[in-house]
Length: 338
Image 1 (tube, one colour):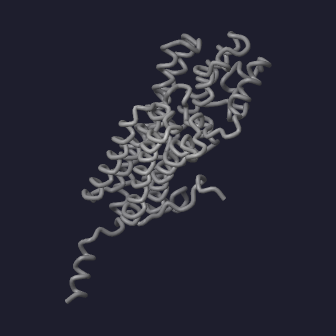
Image 2 (tube, helix red, strand yellow):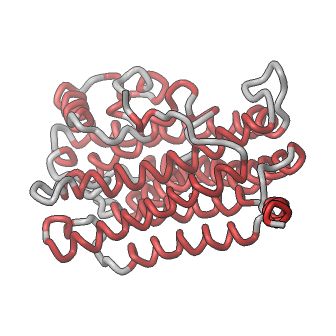
Image 3 (cartoon, one colour):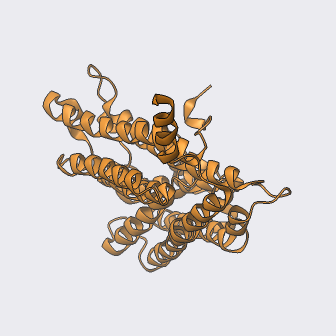
């Protein structure tokens, strides 16, 4: 009798997705999650380049607003670090961070003080160190008091315009390749393609979710937290522009959408995933600390640690239930180290 009850319970427990269901989940993620995000990124990055052409002064409100909107669009897509984003290191060209050795300000300072001609065109600028490209480099030019006042104003203007144009060109390449080639490859696996089965397609999507959660916990929250004895508030992401907590919120919004879509028709799991994400976002919203300066004070530090713990709780739920539901695992990723 006990054996019969066990078999009945197992029959009611959702198992790995069938191939047809896996394909449907992948297609939904591609068409409703991936493609719209890179389309928005391309559009907002082009607006950023246009804004820089109109007014390249660091204090320009219109330029800073366009920068913020384009950066928002990148963060909403930044967990999708595979395919066209990975090719030619485009993801790093848009987002070189963490920068533990301070390569970005050093490289920018060298370009500005020498008035290097590499900044004259976006095409040539692609040959510079990746540390001087993308949104984090542009943050220094727009928000860092030292870099934004260094050297010739004319050269900084040229550099700002070229950097913004480089961001726009890179974002456009990613979007175009997703639209014309990579979406179909992911939706329709083949023996000669980068994804040979629906399971492989789901694997890479699932990995983008788990790696995105890990990056938010370990880098966006973990780096400024440091240790109790040595908190590191100046290691927070984009603290100069006051966007540190915003990036955590945007990332959680994007990852929640992906996680719920991956849950597919498992309404109970989708609901619990959504609740776990909502809990983390509520804790974050309650901080009222846009750059995580509170890591240095015991009481506020505890509240930031609680946000990190809430993100780790999501990671546990994803690993324990969503991965088995999909029949995949996260596997190794670059954040795991050697």
